[in-house]
Length: 184
Image (cartoon, rainbow, N blue to C red; front, top):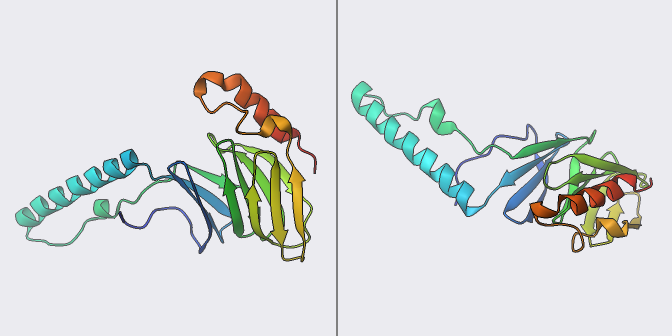
């Protein structure tokens, strides 16, 4: 269901990930956008567009014009934007607790999934990150420096043991603190 191009990146989209009704897009502008693609969000957007089309048709009859106004060009807005890379975002991996991004700047950044808060920057590659994957207690990265690295994550950062319900905010906070302490 295509609802028009989203607002967001100012340069080429270079990385994508999908997790739990959200799309994560990374771009050559060094930013990551988080998009809600749940049925509810899409239905809401479709209703907004339908209303705008109806309004535009009414205006067209009244003013003898048949073009789409600027309101019709209203695009999907991201839930939040992540900024921290100094070059293109080239890889994204997501689980219920963390978003991990890698860039052309050879930096890996771990973010909180719910808020987008930056938790940690990791350095260890000498060139652009080209691929990554995450598991409950590990992060796997590859780079243009011809290396692949396995990073150990703290036990508290395991999303299967961390809170996935808002009712257990203390456990989620503990997991984020563990990720923040992760060594370089």
